[in-house]
Length: 357
Image 1 (cartoon, rainbow, N blue to C red):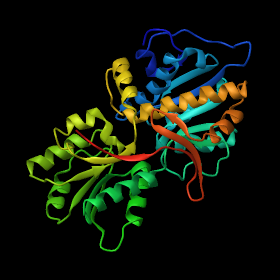
Image 2 (spheres, one colour):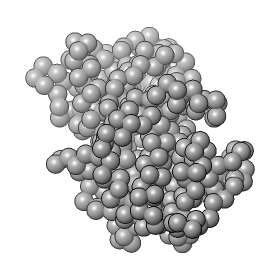
Image 3 (cartoon, helix red, strand yellow):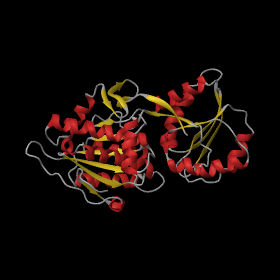
């Protein structure tokens, strides 16, 4: 990274991905707000984590004056809960007033610690069970139920009633599929549900079993790194079904390794402003996991606005400002903070259905 943007304290593998940036220390008006950002910058989920970080960086690059009182402390967690916990303790030692976690597993690991140490926490975590009872946690993305229900509504509109689902066992996919299965109406059924460990790469048996079933559509909720293996076997055995799934379909690596298997597949996600996409691709050379980047960009803008209102490095004040978000127009559309009786509070954006090209 080059150019003039807000200071980022870069740890672990991020040191290999970025060059030094101009630092902004304490301003006369308000103290520096340090935000610790734990995200996967290496490993199978690196596209997701990198996009989350890029959103913060791009926001501060484009409007450095608005971010002069903020400082990002970025550290790689490899989507490993233990690494995320280590990052949390490091952030505390460095004086972070807020911590941001990217993904369900890291958020699930860090949230109890954040609650115990009374550290304000921002979570890009769709699982509504994580942090729901924590008054110092704010979910900055829609809950998984909203994506699953939107997906099911779309499938109904296509007349699909019989589903096969191939899923990696993880808290992320479990949350999505739990809502999906419970929302099925009479006449709708999951004919086959095949679960595999996230490290599985041999799907020959799965493809054979899926070919034997009579279904309308196939849900593919695998972990990054598994799509290529599955779709190669599916192509070899001539398994052809309409495919639906999750925002993992925004991974360019997975789309490429699927070798056409994801073409036409549908998934639920959020809007992304076309102009933001253009600027983002010009800056980072890819639109992989663009919705995640757009979400972080909007969150960064809200943090900048909140830091001005609080005029301090008080993380609790920042959270309260975020909870007052109403009809904020961002690159993911109109955002507002919603306090849901079942899912708790979260920043809500419109959910849409997207198709893989």
